[in-house]
Length: 598
Image (tube, rainbow, N blue to C red; front, side, top):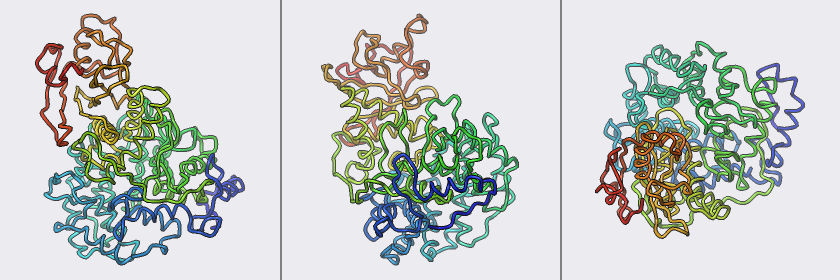
């Protein structure tokens, strides 16, 4: 057992209890704990380290789960977690991994996340090189005691992404929704530091980072990006503090950052941390592994590590946090991104990013690494499945990509189909999962594809694309609909009692769908389509007492766009508009809903 060290003297009061928890892994399912560098109880490699190593994709990098293809960022996360676990020396084929990482560097000096990560698109600088994989490639090589073949070219690529504000271009994540982001700025500065190259305009960058504090609502935290929302979040605090630490600065109001993280916007009663919006954002009352790591690290960098003497909604902030993180461990040794909540009622499968977050956070908390009580061996888990319908956001010909969605979607769908007997309700629960996975965060879009599932940042549009991707993996046609200030989704569903499938509306942002028992404007009870909502909007303008089918989105259906998808070729089709003049007899109705599938 490593000795437990505390940098905040007040925590010594709870030393005995904390030591017991570190040794025992006392959590609601954590089993017996061990120090990060130790093997499991029977002398074998720690099960978390074994799960991470099982995510190696051949002689290349690491994927999101065993059997996945390799991604540059997941490789860096795997190596950092193995280092924390004291298991990096157990990594075989180091030279091959170094060569694989070095080969990710492109002619412009930047690095790729994965081949064709942006679905055939190029970023504005004319390539698919991006700051996140560049940071992780450099960091991975650093951990392997190696360097890029062209370090100066990497530096040139990074510096070219710097804007006049001192921040760094967020296009790779935000796709124009935000000009700069704390996350891209951290990846840029972190990579330059790791390369031993000078960081340009440090004072200007420090000033920009500090300007991201006390944004929307004056809550004291940091916003992730300079976009239209500018909400403080645990992630914003983390990236700001990492940057300030790298650049030798400090926030102007450090006490406010700490207050934010320990307030109703931060630590939850169960000990984990939430996204950070809280009031006004109904879906944020749940802890996530991601935000727990962010909160723990930010507090550490503030010089006030999480302590049981802190005041938050958790009774014992540090010990409860350790217990919550430990309980996110699955039998295979990996960690999931959520706990059990109203929105995520089933355990999440192990993922590399969540495992990295958990291992890092537990290491920062100087806690013992849990060992699952009913351990199973990690194995390549891909079950090939060709979706019945294609979608441009999912590569149906790649079994690893389809399984990345299906391993999440199928258990949720099948569980609630058995529990309720309703496909509409089962998909509604999947809708909640998509909403919880995305946040909502500040402006981030990412490309349609694995990026949304892997990162989980964004607003309603990102939620809609994620729901479409999950639904496609379990054989439901899906398409997006756009209304004022919101992006929704339609899924083609057929309940047992219906004579035909119908396009049914789902609203990821409020994780709801209209109750099919409520008659549509045409008198049917076969689910509500976007067309039903448009007609209903017009009726309610003349009859304010008419029941509202949803809480928020039904107020906005004065003007709608539906983006069709060719389910055979998996390509986007024509985009059609509807407004308050549209009726069931309008030509667009038959075009979008052939055979009265509204």
